Image (cartoon, rainbow, N blue to C red):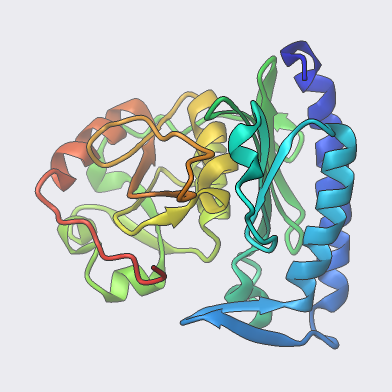
Length: 270
């Protein structure tokens, strides 16, 4: 893979993701068997169909790339690859099953642990947030960037309703506006597009949930780091990151200070 190819590759990835979106939407409201992979962790026929389509299309675009996806058994051969696709074929499966339009398809491309391309697509609303090295971040076809909000009291935080119920937003609930949104990838992409100001989680997240969104936030002018300000690295053996704070640089700094003494949450899917 040549980095100069990434802008053109991005266009082909966007087409593959749109095709996966069409595949997913064929299942909504119709025959779509679902079952639990683990506690509070559903999977459906739509997840598997999108995974199959993306695996075929993306590996055809980059045969030498490794593969890491929520719906593919991880044999860890990806660890020997310089370039790795990091994919969630349907992030927000619970919202998809409930026909809440807050789910997304997320594709990241990582080089030596660092993301170089990201695409997040909500097939219900047809919102696409995409970018790659050498190409700007776009939202619905227009160039996009993180918000310029500097005041925590006026900032909107995209939150998980389950984390909110567990009290993980108690420290900021009185000082920021909370907006529950389903998919993690979608939340991060909306931060990159300036549609919300902040996303953070103190709960461990799988790399496929956040890879594309972390890249998009960073290249859209924001910061996306662990709670201790360390850089998020991908294609790790465990395939998870411990926490994440994403926002424009000013709000990111303020959030790191506000969260400094907050304990990390346990991994409920360990």
